[in-house]
Length: 162
Image 1 (cartoon, rainbow, N blue to C red):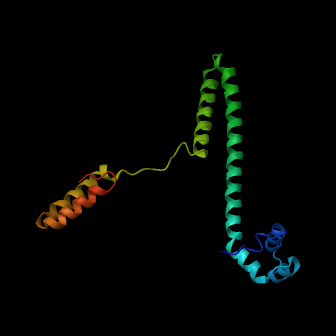
Image 2: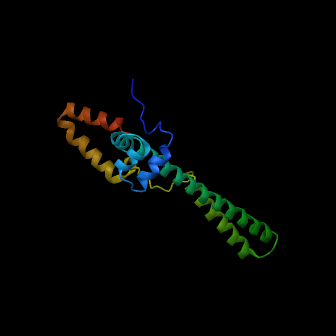
């Protein structure tokens, strides 16, 4: 049965971790909180990095939520402006408000990951790749087993076209 980390189960765990983060020597932390220096070293090596990673992820998530909240508030303000100019004949203001709403929606989509602007390369549709693929398969005509293996491997690729 695995042993429980004495620092994780210590009533002053947060204080121990705060002391380490404040650059207090491990020996001093151990003596101050009645644990062994080895237990402090083990905890800091095995458990603190996971906690710091979770804290970092939580902070990033909070920042994204904050940005999203601000973008949504900006979108609401922009909609108010659009509603105000919608009934006028000021077409420039209308189009400007529409443009801003579109930009806001694009940003919101990027923040929420609903809009992915990562370029996609469809190599199997690229004429140069098709020429290379054809050249490989044609060259392998003299080696039927190798050709069969290569064609089979190409077909197993996503969107394989051989």
